Length: 68
Image: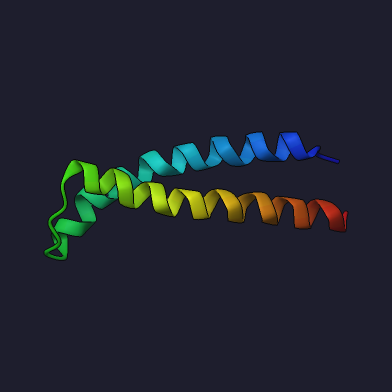
């Protein structure tokens, strides 16, 4: 069984990588839809989604860990 601390560390590492991918993807995808954003805006948007992703990932890990 994975400890809460290990779950949190895994979720943070996974989300950090996701953050970098999200920023890069936004830089390509948003302009394709006619949305222009500055580098700072890309970082801010990705940070918002990253916070939600981190919470979701941690909660799901704990839920599945509880079931086993």
